[in-house]
Image (cartoon, rainbow, N blue to C red):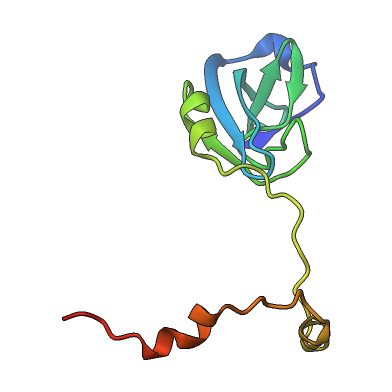
Amino acid sequence: MSEITGRTSLRSAAKAVVHESYSFACMRCGLGWEQSYEIEHHTDADGQDVVMYVVDGRVVPSPLQRPRCQHCDSHVVRIMRPGRVTSAAHRLAPPAGPVEAPTTVAEQAAEQAQPKEPHHWHLSDLLHVFHRKAV
C-alpha cells in the first residue's frame, strides 16, 4: 500500500477509516507522548490502495515509518501500544550529562609530579608493622 501525505482530494472518498493510537518514547531525551490517528484507506486513480494518516484534520506522515521526537527531533523513538507512556518513561535512562575527557599519559604524569600536601607522619604509622596481633 502506498501512502499519501498532504493530499486532501481523496479524503472524502475513504473506503474505510480506522482509529488507532500509539505511545512513543524518545530514547534520546526521554520524552513520552501518545497520539491518535484516523487511518483512511482509499483507492487512487490507478486502482492502488492508498493509506492516509490524519491528525486533527491534517494529513501527516505515517508514524510507523520514521517517527520523530517532538522535543529533540531525534529519530530514535520507540513505538508502543497505547497507554504505555508512563511505564516507559520510568524505565528510560536519564539523559546523559557532560562527559569528562579521558586524561592522557602525559597529563597523568604531570598530576603525579605536582607536589601534594605533605603527609604528617605519626610514630604509630611507622611502628604498626611491629605490632603483634593477639591470637
